[in-house]
Amino acid sequence: MRIGQFTRSDEERPWAGVVREGGVVHLGEAGLAAGVDLPRRTTDLLSEWYWRKKAALAIEFAEETGTSAYDPADLDRHAPVGEPRKVICVGLNYEDHAAESDADPPDEPVLFAKFPSAIAGPDDEIAWDPDLTEKVDYEAELCVVIGTEAREVAVDDAMAHVAGVTPGNDVSARDLQFADEQWVRGKSLDTFAPIGPDLVTTDEIADVHDLDIWADLDGERLQESTTANLVFQVPELVSFCSRAFTLQPGDVIFTGTPAGVGVFRDPPVLLEDGSEITIGIEGLGELSNRCAHR
Ligand code: ZN
Image (tube, rainbow, N blue to C red):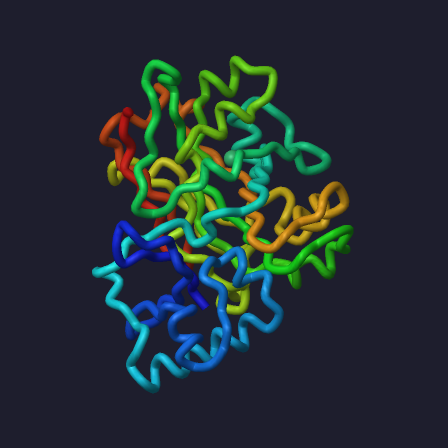
């Protein structure tokens, strides 16, 4: 299933929809018509027991009756998960990126955080005040979305707690990141965690550790790798996190970026007012955001 969040007008709050060939099925609306209760937001949907079965019933009903399916051209897109309780990031999780950062790959995952309020969607601008930061950088990342609560789970059991994956951009104000003792400010500016376009459920992906990943800035490819190069794979990351804190439905883990980020290029390449940055992952789609000073 490919789950996005959408609105039909500015007055509406985002609702979870399943992206199908025949259009976007509004899950709550189709569910109501089909007699099953489905929450409006992805975070709440993932928390429901049997949500996959209920969603399948709603989709079937929508397709049979031709109701509650919308043309994507008539909809605004939002982050597929709008209000995660946690946004966890993994540092130095590709060997080539560790090398360009002049660091050894760590023995255990290195975690840091972005505030959940930094989440943005595919139609949002990445916006910042040029008086606050002049060094805004991109990081192409595979993002993991937690499906069921995970507390002290074993590596072998970890994938059962993952709902799906989506492309993400770990946008980073390098001047703030490197000036501060720790990174949360430089990583958490409003709009600095765009994810999407869709949450793609794990059953749709043969192997999350065999997907091409890239970043294009104004059409020029600046990052190009594969998730096969992750130092710590998704089950290890989920298990590792869950030993320290409970992972909850909708929590997002940015799994780290490969080589080619702007700050370590010679000369450095940074995001500017008007830049268009696109993060793509094979089979998951592309996340494009326009950048703007504000
Ligand atoms: Zn990152």
